[in-house]
Image (cartoon, rainbow, N blue to C red; front, side, top):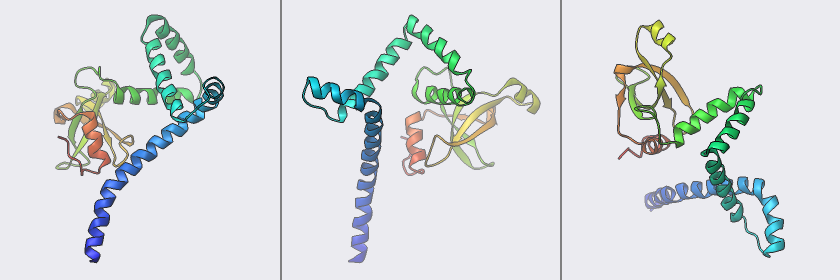
Length: 199
């Protein structure tokens, strides 16, 4: 009887936990959006339409992001964005954080990556005979390759279960195995601790 209860509990946990975490993350996103847009939207909608609900802040957040995307992809908007970004990266502390975060976001969310870069690769790490999934991010600096006498590439090896942290490794280009695994499949593999294999 106890064994059956244990099996039921584990089966329920498999269903409940991912669902609960998904709802929790949506809740955090709604609270974040509410904190930014809610105080402005609530009085406007309450006075003019007689209603307001928290989901409006999420809709407004998505709308603002789309508008920003529209503006920065057009000539004038891009010029203005470039001007302010150049000012931003001259600010102490910000100039150390912002460029790195921007590169990470561009790497994760844009699909127009050049050639093989941005692809999921397999490399022997942390020792020979042991393999790890990684993200090919760039060719190594020429001076580094010159010092080692090898053509190297920068490979980001993510850690589980948080794939945004990990190790930047310099691996000889000839030792890197390119795959057709998508970024999304690799993320699922890492977050699940290897339980969910790439299709």
